[in-house]
Every structure is written in structure tokens, then in C-alpha cells.
Image: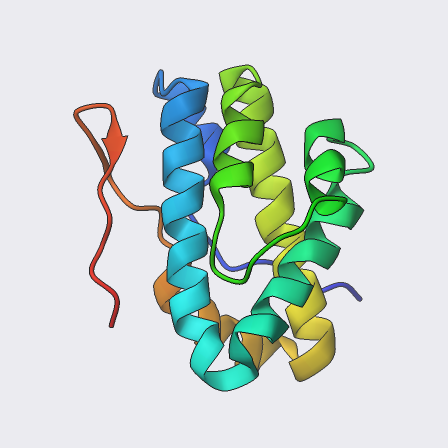
Amino acid sequence: MQPEAPNITTFVQLAARDADASRIAEAAVAQWSNIDAALSPIIGQSGVAALFKRSLRLTGVNYPRLHALSESTLRPGDHPGLRAALSQETALDAAAASDALLRTFHELLANLIGDSLAERLLRSAWNLPSIENGHAAREPAP
């Protein structure tokens, strides 16, 4: 049985509220920053980066821009490539790709450490940052 991602406000819901692709990209990058902050102290920046890159590769089967990003050199905790890739999509495609990427990441992490622990570690990072004035509001790191 595959683990199920926690109940989160999805990027597709943002797109339904008229967020454009650039706003969705900003929210996605902010969320990945939250995930980095939550997991890096536990599995290290390179561990988070490896899971992120594997998630990009797997999700990229259905989203070619993400696959192309998985082939690039990624630095731990740095996501400008994700912002650029998602910004080039339609809002709905950017949202669907972001949701798929998060779910894939959660699944990979849960397969490594168990669903319950993965959910506890990611709980604070799952909530989408609010979008205000066209930009994702960044939450301060814990």
C-alpha cells in the first residue's frame, strides 16, 4: 500500500482561485524551502537534495520540464530552477506538477522512514504559504 500525503491545501486549489503560474511557482519554492528547513537537520541538506532530485525524475515522467530539471545540477536548498520550470507552464499544469512532486517526495520519504514519521517531520512544511499581493509570503524558518 502506498503512503498517502497528508491533507494539504493543494496547488490545484490555488490555480482554481485564479493564481497564475508564477504565483504557484513562488508558493512551490517557498514550500520547498520549508521542507528543506524541516528535514535538513535530520537527514542533511544532501539527503533532502537527493530525495528532491529523485522526486523530480519520477514526476518528470508526466511533466517534461521537471524531468529536464532533474537532469541539471541541483544545489541543496536552492530552487530557482523549479521556479523557472513551473513559471513556464499554464497555471493548471504548474499546479498539477507541484502537487505531483510533493506527493512523490512524501512517498519516497515514507518508504524510507515510515509514513507516520514522514508525516510528522513534514507536518509544518505541508501548509502552503499564503499568497499575498501576487507573491508567496515566506514564513520564517523555525
